[in-house]
Length: 128
Image (cartoon, rainbow, N blue to C red; front, side, top):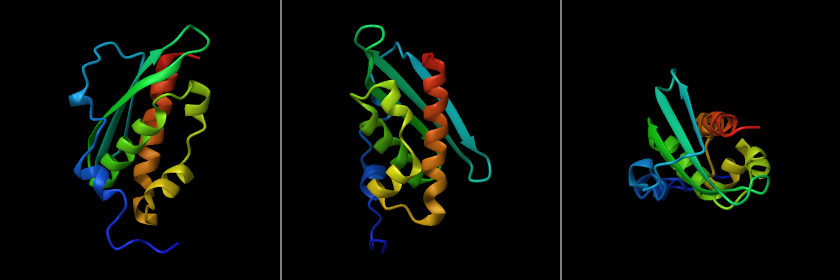
């Protein structure tokens, strides 16, 4: 696949919609952290639930990222994708979904893995 002249993820980096600092929710059901020391990137994902026990879905997702712009863009996209989905569906998110949505270059794919690690930790924090 040919990479576009301006990365698709750049708009998400410039105007993220799901930053944790902008959220009014104080009660998160799941929160997870991941880092990639070699890339000096850190990601925190927070998930809020809605619905009855057993049929809960992710009502809101937010992130805090300290690191390269591509990591911020991946976290923002993931938060948008997660909203309205069940935990089971959230567990199915994988790096190919990020590649397809954001056209990540091979050297940028670590950012998707960083966000997936934070998501895995947030879902584990949420419960079984």
